[in-house]
Image (tube, rainbow, N blue to C red):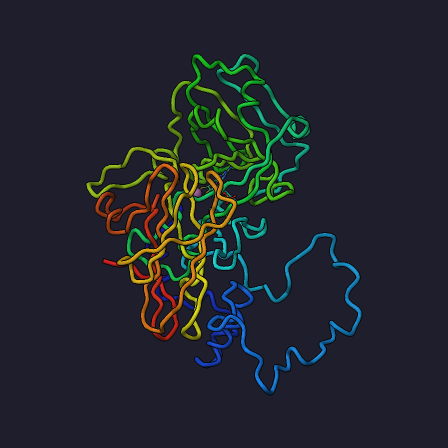
Length: 446
Ligand SMILES: Nc1nc2c(c(=O)[nH]1)N[C@H]1C(S)=C(S)[C@@H](COP(=O)(O)O)O[C@H]1N2
Ligand SMILES: [Mo]
């Protein structure tokens, strides 16, 4: 099953309204702008933008002068449910299925609302989803994990077996190889949620695969690859290089301090740092150690790049250096000229982010953004940049460089090398046009 159907996605261009609520769509244009101001202050951290706070006017601000009920009354004793939920004022912040993407039976995707995130950690309930055959909530007492193949002692582990072993916790990004796929064909989807939202970053907890392979007595003289297999019906099997398997790959049960969510592979998933999402096999039930690549279906047909001459590019799996500005980004509206904090995220499957540069003139001039800590291997890095908008058209771009020296290419450079027919592995520079009326849209530069 492919990650997208391009013709269906094409419709997105004509439906920029989907990210606005129904309420917003029925308001007049002026109302809509002020509505958006409120919506974005709440949902995406575009601060009461232009001024950065207002000087106290002589008549005062009723909102600060009046004592609200919450200052005089009794608050709720504890949250009603045993598990906390976000404020009702944040209900706009949701994962979304693309309205232009028809679900093919149970094969589906939901995109993470990157425009609303701070820092680098994706809240568990907003992690993107990609299911090739639907998702399950598997009873951990019934789940088994097996290691077989080129090992001295093949073993079957229960969740209890795994969870009493030594473990590690590490922060890593996961990105579907098809993330930003529509841009190849010049379909400028309207928001960063849809251009880059098959991306998330969490703290994962689990057992390094190497320790489990050692435990089973892996035959290091013969072993060259491992095969990872999921327990759902998607036939999700992936070949992983032994070098990765013995390095930072984890058999993980924890995500952001609690057990994995069902949609993200509960109770067990493979974490393959730096490698495209499809290799992060969910509902992990088996690792087989072998001496050849397994040539699984998704390694031959999908997640490979179609070159201009119609040939398929040799299979790749590392997610190359990439970045995107999340605010201001497509669909947002700047209300006034003046100061704005540009913010975004950068990542590389090869290591750390070394540098992020920002252009506000479509790539003519570049200036360094501030990288916020922590800056970790194969993890999102948050960047910020101070900008004063003069009120005329501006094209915002970010360009990341990683610790191996790789630099994000322009879309034009990437197309020159790889054509326009691919769906996968687009790590090019994203351009957001801020129009004089304040509206931000996705544009591709020639
Ligand atoms: N068992 C299983 N593992 C799977 C998949 C799946 O459908 N089944 N989808 C893969 C793909 S294509 C991606 S991008 C990631 C998505 O992980 P997420 O749903 O936790 O975001 O899981 C991968 N692992
Ligand atoms: Mo994917």
